[in-house]
Image (tube, rainbow over all chains, first blue to last red; front, side, top):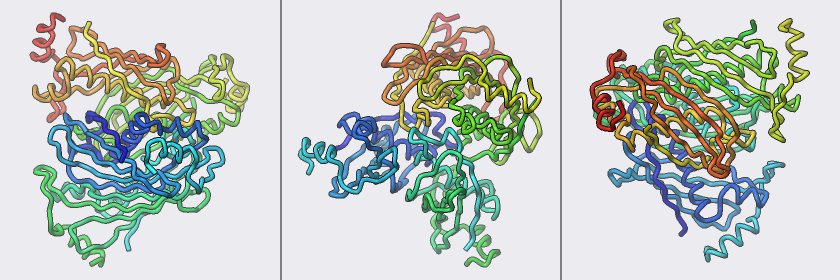
Length: 138
Length: 138
Length: 138
Length: 138
C-alpha cells in the first residue's frame, strides 16, 4: 500500500462562524493530499499531462467525524487503493495534529480522460501499468 | 417531497485549467441549494440558531456525471429526504441550464448540535417536528 | 458612465469566525460585478475570447468600510471608468442590502493580453474602441 | 525590519482557465504570509484574541506583475511596516520559486477591534507597544 502524509496548518479563511474548518475545505485538503502523493510518487497532474491525460473525479465520499479548530493542523494521509479498473482510487484520513484523533475520512474515484476531446479512456493507460509494475503494485 | 430550485451562473473563478467547474465547488453549490431551500421553507441556518442549534455535516456524497463549462449556469435542485432519525438529509441534482442534462448529483447528512457545547442532540428537535407537521411531512 | 448592479446573498461559507464576510471574498464579489457588467453590456470574458483577448488584473485596491453579516446581501455596483489607455478600469461600491450603507469600495485595472502567447497588447483593441463608440463613450 | 518567508506550492484548484493562479488567491497568499509572520513572531490572530482584539483589514492593495503557473511555488515574503498609528501594516512580495522574479506585491492595513462590540481601538494597544519594545522596533 502506497501512501503519503502532509501537515496543513488550519488557516483563518478556512474557519467558519462556528470557529471550525468549513466542511467544503476538506475536499481541497483531499486534493492537497493527492498532489503531495503525486509529487512523492511521480503520479501528479503534470505527470498525467505528459501522457496526454487528465484525471477528473467521478465519485467523492466524505465522512466528518470531529471538528478541527483554528490553531490546530490537519494531518492528511492519502493512500492509493489498487484496482484492476481504469480508475484512480484514493482514500484519505485526516487527523488533528494536536489531539491525534481522526477528524475526517474520505474516498475519491478518478477516471482517465483526454483533456482535449474530453473522451474517457476505458482501459488502464500503459504508463499507469508501468508505474504500478515499477513499484511492485500489480 | 419538498424541494427548491436555484440557478447559479458559472463564475470565472470556479473554472479550472480544463475550463470546467472544479469539482470542489459543487460542495458549495450544494450549500447554496440548502440555503435557498432554507430561505424558501423557513429552515435556514438562522432559523436553526434561533432554536439554539447548528447543523454540521457528517456525511457527503458527490457523483460527477458530466462537465459544466464557463458561460453555462448550474440549475441546483435540493430535496429534503424524510427520515425518522435526528438528521437532516438532502439530495441534490445539478443540471446544465444550457443543455438540460444532469452534471452532478449528491447527498448530504447533517446532525443537530448545540453550537456552544458542540454536543450532538440525539432526538429530533421539537421545532423540526413542528416544522414537518405544519407541512404534513410526518 | 456605464454601470451594473447585482445583489448577492451572503453565504455561510463566506463568513469567518467573527461572523462577518471574510475580506478575501470581496475580490470575488468584484469579479461577480464585472461578470454581471460584461453580460449586461456585452463586454464579458467570452466576448473578449472571441476577439482573441484575455484581460488579467494588474492592479487592485480594496477599502473596507463596514462589516457585512450572514443574513444580509451584498449589493454590488460596478462602474466602467473611461480611460484613453489600453486598460479596462472598474470601480466598485458594495452596500448592505439591509442597511443601505457602504461596506466596501474598490478599483481594478486590467490589461489586454493574448491568452496563448501571454503578450500584452499596448494599444486599445479595435473591438473595444468600436464597443465604446456604439455606446457614445469616447 | 521584521519579516517572514514561506513557500507555497501552487495548487490545482488555484489555477484558472488560463493555467495561471487566479488573481483572487493572492489575497489568501497574503493572509498565509501574515499567519506565518504571526507564528514566527508571536503576533498571530490567537495572540490577538488573548488580548481581546481582532485585526480586520481596512485597506488592501495588490499589484500583479507576472503570472504564476501550476508546478511552480509562491515564495511569500511578509514585512511589518512600522507606524506610530494604531494600525498593523504589512507589505508583501511574492516571487516565483522556479524563476526568482517577482510575480506580485501588495500592502495591507489592519486596525484593532473588540471582536464582541465591533468597536475600533483608536490608540495603539499596550501589548503591541510592549511587543515592539521587546524587539527594539519603536
